[in-house]
Image (cartoon, rainbow, N blue to C red; front, top):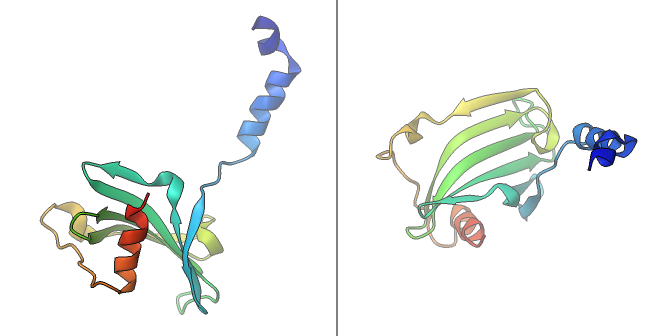
Length: 135
């Protein structure tokens, strides 16, 4: 072990881990003519029956405000087929990358009594719940 720690291979290995950032696995949920929507499947967490997940919409053309992507951190109650958005981050770049962003905290979610959204069967938000609850 002492030989390995003193070797140049150990230093090279450390450099590789530092130089290459880790990338999340975004799984495409849907695509249409204006955007693609993804879920970050490696970061989905389940706590006491509630699923917490990041989703992202990547726009093919900039929106009026110049944004090219938007990330949402939401919680999903699979049993009652409901959800609420906790955080929204709007990016000027594709796929939620870079430092040019606007962070929006959804103040309605700070209490458990805040309103949940109950999407109708067959609607897009209902499909999102079904998708994320599959993991």
